[in-house]
Length: 233
Image 1 (tube, rainbow, N blue to C red):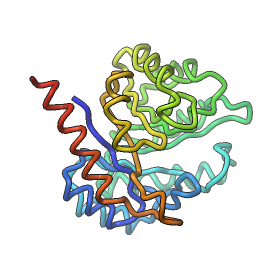
Image 2 (image 1 turned 60 degrees about the vertical axis):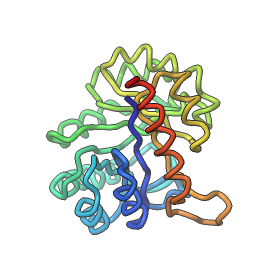
Image 3 (image 1 turned 45 degrees about the vertical axis):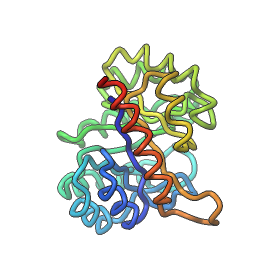
Image 4 (image 1 turned 120 degrees about the horizontal axis):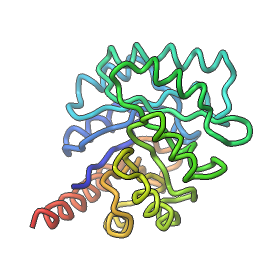
C-alpha cells in the first residue's frame, strides 16, 4: 500500500491534510529556500490539529548542507522540544564539504532523537554517490530517506529510484519527492515500486505561494486511494 506525506509550511495546509485524511505531514517554513525549522508554536498547533504521523525538518538556515558547530548545536537543541510536542519523525540532512554524509553529526542526531524516527532529506541527492550514501544511512539505521533519485525531479530520477528501492532491502524506506504533481503519482508508483510519496502541492501559478493547493491535494489523494484499492483487488 502507498502512503502520502504532505509538506506543510502553514497551518491552513495542516488543516487541509487533516480534512483529506493524509497519512503524514512534514512541517517546515520558507519552502522557496528549501525549507528551515518551523517555530515551536506552529509545531504544537499542528500536533493538536493533525492526527496522522508528523515529521519536522531541522535545518538551521537555507543554503548549503555544510553546518558549523554552532549551527549543529542549534539543530540538536531543537530535537527534544519537537519530540515533547508530539512529533514522531525528525527530518535532517548534513554533508561534509566533499559532499559525503557528515557521519559524525549523523551519530549525534541518532543519539539525541530518542525514540523518534529519522528521515534523511534531499541533501542525499547531491552526495558523491547516491547508492553509497544509502548504505551509510542503512548502517546508522535511519528509517527513511527523501530523494528524487539524484535528479532535479522525481520523474527524471525514475531509474535511480527503482534501483534504490531494490537495494534498500526493506531496511530503509525510500520516499519519493521532487516536484511531484498528482498526474505523476501513478507512473512513479508503477515504475519504482515505492510505498511513500512526498509533495508540497503548491500552485505554481501564484508567486510566493506556500499554502497547499486544496484541489491538487484532493486529486493526489484520490489517485492514491484508487491505486491502493486496485492493489487490494
